[in-house]
Amino acid sequence: MIPTTTHWLNSDPTTDDYVEVLSEQQLHERYPGFRHRSGMVATCEREAGFLRPEVGVAAHLRLAERDGAVIRRPEKVTDWEIARASSC
Image (cartoon, rainbow, N blue to C red; front, top):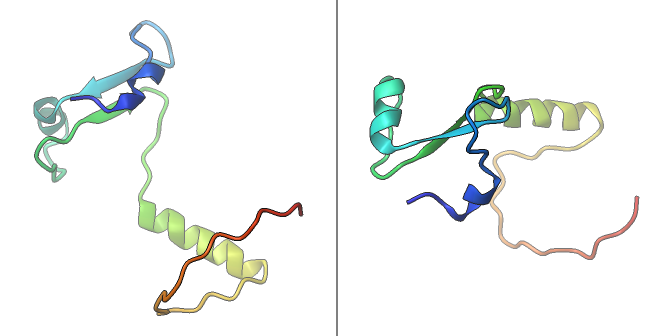
C-alpha cells in the first residue's frame, strides 16, 4: 500500500518531475545490493540524487561548530521541551 503522500506523485512519465513508485519486488530487482525491509516501497525521481544521512548530519554539525555552536557528545537527553517561537 502506498503512503498517503501519493497526491504529490506525478503520474505522467513523459515529464521531468515524474516520480516512479517501486514495489518491494521492483526495488529488489533494481537495487539488489541494498537491504530492503519486508513491505518496503520506494519512490524514484529522475532528477533526484542520493543522500547518505550520516554524512549529511556530520556536515551540519561541522557547519554549526564553525558558526559557534557547542556540540556535546555523548549526551543523554533527559527532557525535551518545545519553546515558543521567536523572531530572529
